[in-house]
Length: 336
Image 1: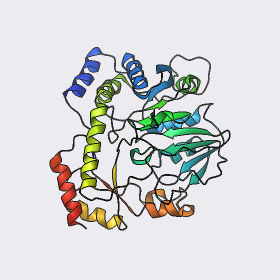
Image 2: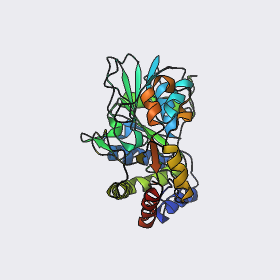
Image 3: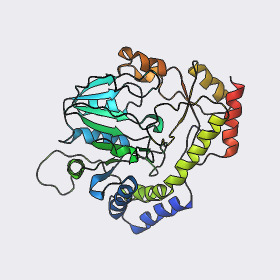
Image 4: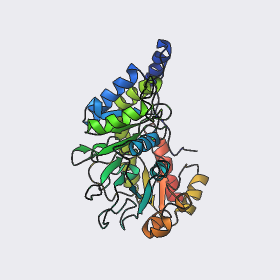
């Protein structure tokens, strides 16, 4: 079976992990500080505006739990990963779900009279999303799937008040396990999140929680970050191969450069197509089926409900060979 995705590791990642283990210090230390500096340089901000975390979900929750992010109601796209809605629920915040657009599964903020205190805009499949706007509304840009993408010359993760990144094994780059980051151009907002997650040796009695990444993950992540340009370029190559073969990939709504987190095809019978592809040895999936969104606004979001039945996510990852991508193309043609 050609996997839907897998991380791209080599000797450099192995050596980076070994160096940290050999040093005897594996908790958050100089490695974490260094990756925050390098990540800041990559996206175009300063190190005090970057906080790496134990996961992308933890970064979302931390952004909502801090005093700067903790406000009453959060507007969240119906279609997509449950992490945003779960984080808002865990933070004790109200949720307002936003339906998809007619021409894209991304949230349709354009026709919405936004009254929420916070909005989470999600760069679905690596496509930089349109940003919501509303007086007094804080915008969190969920760029978990779009690291390496830009919109109008700005890193996608920096377009909101706060940005969220994910470094899980299925994402564009990984720290070897789970990891994430909060990024911004506002050091005070990131500083509030940093304070909340830094409880060692504190004596003020304030509520805090541990959301830290360790130095082993930071070491692997630094290697992956250095390779990110090449890994994104390889994803673009595979994406273009699929397009050239006539696979009807979702390309609408691009607001700049996509980082091609997923190669998503439109098919009116997505569930059946996925079954046929998997029988051909291709690890296709339905990215977010209707069953995954039960209880998350799907009943009041007809366009999101429709998109949930019409999308097929095909294998795409940096380590994918041309033989594997050709096999996916052949399987798509055979299962038409």
